[in-house]
Image: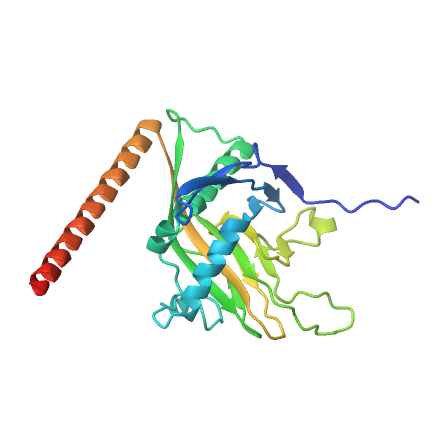
Length: 284
C-alpha cells in the first residue's frame, strides 16, 4: 500500500505578497522599500497571517527593545497582562512614530483585514470602503526560564500580533515519548473530538523563529509554554483596532490627523521658542 503524504494546512499567498513596503527610515531620511513575503494560513476558523520581518525592521526593533529593556525609566506593564513574566515593558506609540515604524505596523494590520475580507468573499455595501487601523498598545515580553503565558486573549482591540526578536537555545527535558513543546506558542480556536472523528482542527502549535510575525483576531485564545535553559525569549506583542469606512469618511479622517499633527508641531515650536527666550534672557 502506497504511503500517503500528510495533509498540509491551507495556505493562501497574498495577492502581491506585499513585494514592496515603503518604510520611512529616519537615519537615512528617505523612503526605502524591501520585499516581504506574507501568507494567510487557515488552520481553523479565522485566518492567521504569517510573515518574516524585513532585516532593517528586525534590526531597528532589536535596538529599540534593547534600549527600553536596559532603561531605568521603562514602564513595566506586567500588572495589566496575563503573563507569568517579570519583564514586560511598554513601547510607546510616540517612539514608533519617531523611528518611522508606526505606519509600517499599521499597514500590516490593514493588509490582514483586507486579505481576510477578500478571501472570505466579504461584500461591503459601502461607497469605496477603506480600512483604517490604529495601534492601541505594543509591549515587550522578555521571557526567561520557567516563565510562561497562560491561555488568554487580548482586550481593547480587534487585531493582535506577536513577532520574535530573540530565541534562546532550550535545554532538552529528555522525557521519553514526549514531543518538545518548550517555548512554543499555541493558538486555540475550539475544543473538538479527535481530528479523524470530528473532521476539524481546534488548535495550532508552532515553535517560532527570529523575525517571524503572526497576526490574528484579538479574541483568539493563545498560550506560550515555558522553557528550560539560560537566555531570553524576546517577543513583542501588539494590539490594533480597525474600522471600515466609506472613502469620503476616510479622507476626512486623514485630514483630521493632518490637522492634529500640525497643531502638535505648532505647540512644540511655541514651547521651543519659549525655552529659547528664557535661555537668551539668562545669557544677557
